Image 1 (cartoon, rainbow, N blue to C red):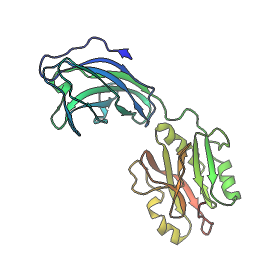
Image 2 (cartoon, rainbow, N blue to C red):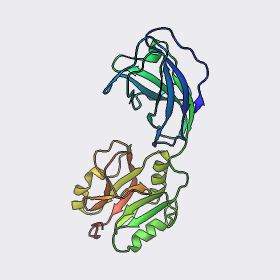
Image 3 (cartoon, rainbow, N blue to C red):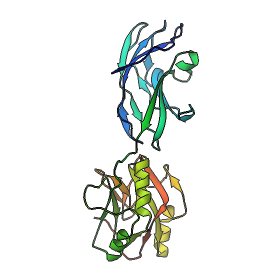
Image 4 (cartoon, one colour):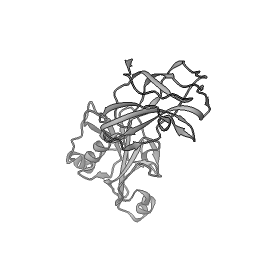
Length: 274
């Protein structure tokens, strides 16, 4: 662990002295474990009570100190920490999106009352270079069903070439699902930005399908809080889709709907996924 240098420690009932830390490489949108050793430098004990009491929290700030993520995950103390005692915690930290230069500031909080910084304590303030979620822009495609020459032609015309081996993400299509030329670029951009699952808009040909897939119609922007499963999703390697509305789908967190990544869905195309 890396030792923390000298920093101001106030006199009073609630004060913290940061002792040492160990921080893994941070990639956008990825959760990692951090090790922190800290000491109760005040005159009052620290006690966590479920989700209340004293907890370890963190903020992500930009290089100028503006908050990007204020209320990071909380980590409780497993037992009472008396004045003068030191303890080691392993908080889970979710790196922000998009990648870039940030400051990661750890602080203690008395839930629903105050942060220790408001009482004069220093935060453990670490400069962090958050890296892209993926290093290589290598997208593969799995077509669930019989071969389709129109799909093959659309994939051959993609802005980002489709690969067969060493892919970092796999997009899931069906026969009759024809992606627009910039579809692969938009998917890889979103994965690099920090999303594990990305889905786009569906431009359906038939009237029945336009009603069925109205929630996924083109024209929207990027939405990380999309209320429906992602259809025809691109997933980072290792994840597998489920099925929703007869199409490969993903329902879960760490996901982005990009209404600009359009797939045209032909009518009567045998779309049930395997």
